[in-house]
Length: 195
Ligand SMILES: NC(=O)c1ccc[n+]([C@@H]2O[C@H](COP(=O)([O-])OP(=O)(O)OC[C@H]3O[C@@H](n4cnc5c(N)ncnc54)[C@H](OP(=O)(O)O)[C@@H]3O)[C@@H](O)[C@H]2O)c1
Image (cartoon, rainbow, N blue to C red; front, side, top):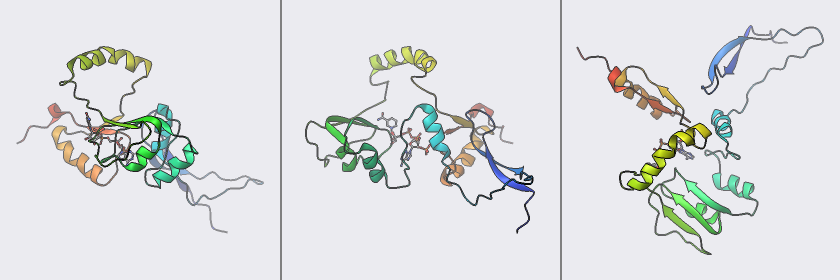
């Protein structure tokens, strides 16, 4: 039998709302009659925990077969409203998930080649409050209440030290796909004076 190692890897969340941190913890020493099980691998998706915490009811793995996962979830039903805040461009698959009369809102331009039927609609939305001042004023007046009531939840952020010098560090982390589910921010006024 292999010797029991002194320590093991552990993923912990140091405080509420923070990221997972990889540490080493002592391995529990089994007493007579105990069984110690060695786990070789686990599937873990930190983003899923975060999304469920925000109130999301179903999470699909964007690295898997998204169409297949959503088809299974819908089980033949259609979606009344889709708000796609990510995709460039919107695909026909998404349109086909709409129920008759359903509507897809997109933050990017909508291709003209999409086939729409049975009252399905696709609309581009524009969040430029400088263009739609009345809407902007009404929205900003409501924002404190929306935050207080949790209707809008602020994005999680991680501050990178070093002012503007932190941007290169942040870009390298983004390129290495080490940032997900939160935004990196720098504070320009904290940039050290150049010598
Ligand atoms: N119409 C408008 O008024 C308007 C205004 C602003 C922006 N936009 C457009 O909106 C889009 C998003 O902008 P943003 O500022 O929100 O960008 P962002 O800050 O980069 O956020 C993108 C979000 O999408 C997620 N994401 C990335 N790839 C995904 C995938 N394949 N499946 C599911 N989620 C994915 C990211 O998750 P991770 O954190 O896990 O990476 C992140 O949460 C861009 O195309 C932008 O040009 C439009």
